[in-house]
Amino acid sequence: MKVITANRLLNGDVVWLAGNGNWVERITLAKAFEGKEAVAEALALGMVSKDRQEVVDVYEMDVTVEDGVIVPVRLREKIRATGPTTHPDLGKQAQAVSA
Image (cartoon, rainbow, N blue to C red; front, side, top):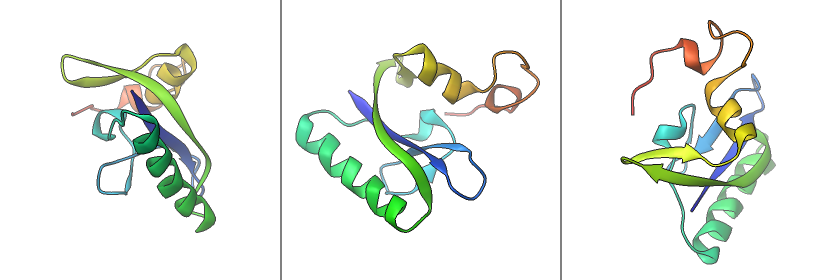
């Protein structure tokens, strides 16, 4: 299972592709894709946003779903989803999280 991620060009925020084609700031709001064809279509949609200069560094990443919540597999992606590890008062982990 995969999600599509990028960084918003305007402010550098980590974002994920939602089911409606918009970019969201919470991985819990992202759409998870299964199968090579679905992932390829979603990645192509993300590249359209890159071409429009809305986002940069578009790529797919592995996730699992635990209790209905999308969870990144790799540590790097877990850090991108929550924020800096040295300052828990900053980043996404310092904000209220809702699914």
